[in-house]
Image 1 (cartoon, rainbow, N blue to C red):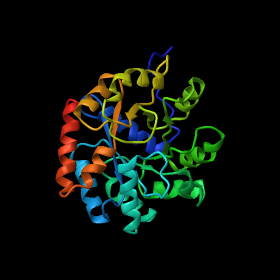
Image 2 (tube, rainbow, N blue to C red; image 1 turned 90 degrees about the horizontal axis):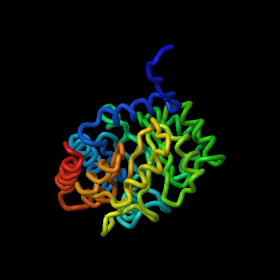
Image 3 (cartoon, one colour; image 1 turned 90 degrees about the vertical axis):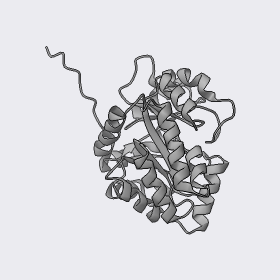
Image 4 (cartoon, helix red, strand yellow; image 1 turned 60 degrees about the horizontal axis):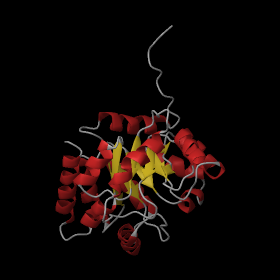
Length: 277
């Protein structure tokens, strides 16, 4: 009887394989998942900022589509999306930004259910795959019956569907969400919207990561986000056993500064130090 470990079944196809490899090969103590609002503050600056993400060590780039009703986003990311919308940034523009990065780093799209369901899940998932995206996050699409068609469409297109576990998610639901995760499982550290927090939620990172992984553990990487904005937070995420630290608001705030590329590079260097790089 063979004692070789069984390779996980990658239902999310090529996208899931690429994301998992990025987590496994990340230098230092954990992977860095860096969020950007696509097209903020304008398309050309956004392109330069995203290139700085790659050069600054982002292992996975999470790219947001500007949306008028972003229920999961705090005021800084919400304002960035509004700026991009007012500048005329479209879904096609954001997909093109992702396409430009996708040879260098796995790119995951973060958007809302309406934008996925309006053209149809199959059509949207295929567009993502054609644009080189590896994964999809839809925070207002709960795992279960509502997400079934989207998960199936992503699987068929080779795009990893990445669900979220929040502190308010019930225990039975945590197991269900964990089982549905492709690529990685997004563990939300706080109740509420995205944003930097005074008084770090890091004290609870260990509990949050353990709950996301479950008593029996999981072969799906767990990344923790919401509230991480500096080296201390990134270090705490890794120390808590997270496979990745997700940073959004702090980077978006840097992208809005007078010298955005330099500001983003400084934040990434700080985060890298926290991850032991």
